Amino acid sequence: MLLYNSLTRKKEEFVPREPGKVSMYTCGPTVYHFAHIGNLRSYIMEDVLEKYLRFTGLDVKRVMNITDVGHLTSDGDTGDDKMLKGAKREHKTVMEIAKFYTDAFFADCGKLNIKTPDVVVPATTYIDEFIRVISALMEKGYAYEAGGNIYFDTGKLDKYYVFNDFKEEDLAVGVREGVEEDENKRNKADFVLWFTKSKFDDQELKWDSPWGVGYPGWHIECSCISMKNLGEYLDIHCGGIDNAFPHHTNEIAQSEAYLGHEWCNYWFHVLHLNTNSGKMSKSKGEFLTVSLLEEKGFLPVMYRFFCLQSHYRKSLVFTWENLENAKITYNKLIARIAPLTAETTGEIDSAEFDRLMNSFTSALDNDLNTALGITAVYDVLKSTANAATKLALLAEFDKVLGLDLIPNGKKAAEAPAEDDIPAEVLDLAEQRKAARKERNFALADELRDKIAALGYEIKETRQGTEIKKLS
Ligand code: AMP
Ligand code: ZN
Image 1 (cartoon, rainbow, N blue to C red):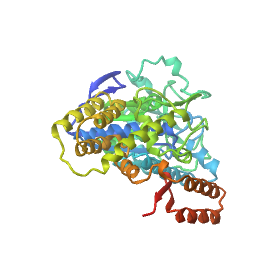
Image 2 (tube, rainbow, N blue to C red; image 1 turned 90 degrees about the horizontal axis):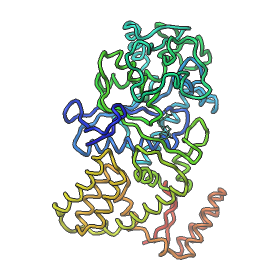
Image 3 (tube, rainbow, N blue to C red; image 1 turned 90 degrees about the vertical axis):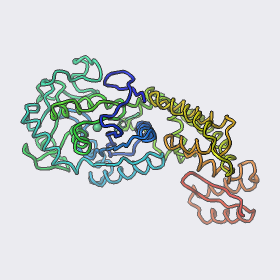
Image 4 (cartoon, rainbow, N blue to C red; image 1 turned 180 degrees about the horizontal axis):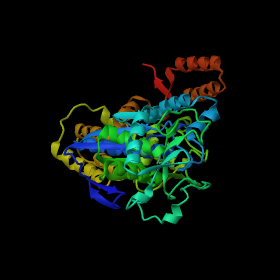
């Protein structure tokens, strides 16, 4: 498989270090708010990558952190802690916030058919490990204490900016707007490994350390969680493109300084989901969630379909119109699959199976071209292969695509088309929807009974309203 590697800036053959096995690390969410659909674009594309690697027969072990401490709005000893900000906003403790939004994150992932990684580690459970690695960096002379904090000394490295030829002065004072310069740093690119109470007296979560009571920086979390669970060599590291600098750059700096050798071979970065006004971000406050998509009548899997129609290395613009188009295309696709699901006889034609499978794997083998992967689904439907062959291929493709092609095809085959439902029933269903919105449940029940009297059953499911003919 060819995969673009941000480290070498080339498409390369993906060859895991140990034959047949892949160690994969993913930066997890900072759990101070719901994940927005931009974050989830990254997780969807990483999920496709993991599933495709497994599809090709590789044994993947995937690890993810949960950032429940240490992610500041700046990388020096300035800025707010994002978790603390979330706790203040909702008048809850940091741990309550972390638990709530971690659960919400995995619930959203579930709806989008994103597999949970094999190992998930909340950063607050690894404090001893962070202290151990930071102590080793101190001993090796890669870290220093200043103003009560421990910093990584980027001046000790031959090459710090690994992903790009950044001009140091452009990136010098942090990377985000409004970040003040931290006077404690020896070099402008230095970053904090451990904060102490000296600057953060209102910090809720603090731990004892050789350098005083405090808490870890964000970057050290990922290095330690990866090395502890996946060993000293990592095959592939994933994240959204904004993480390449400074987060991943810092992960590489401290991991390689600690290990004394190169650490990770392939870096997989997903480009951003943007709105018409720019990058979608939690801090801007304008963010769209999976629940909002559902409220507007989209199945979460339609958003997954929308993402898969584009290449992960191109930024993607979200508009409701674009999503509406994806919904129409998805529904048409499902409508074509529906009649196949009723045909249960026939044998798989292996020549056709191999030919069509080949068009799918060639697409995915070429730097995870999911748009062409979807074209391969249409090739199957257009082909003259029998239903058994088509269904077998769709089931295989969907192990990677995760679009519920066959289950939703079956549902569509069973449900009467909207055109077949009498207008009177549809009208009552609309009235019932309005009644439920106004929380007039007595009226809603009454309308349900009227619908039943006309021979139809109405149900609210996670995916919206379902109307079925009573048998
Ligand atoms: P965070 O919860 O902020 O730590 O981010 C979780 C993941 O989402 C990281 O891999 C980010 O790089 C990624 N991410 C953040 N914003 C976007 C966006 N607009 N589009 C795609 N990925 C994003
Ligand atoms: Zn990370």
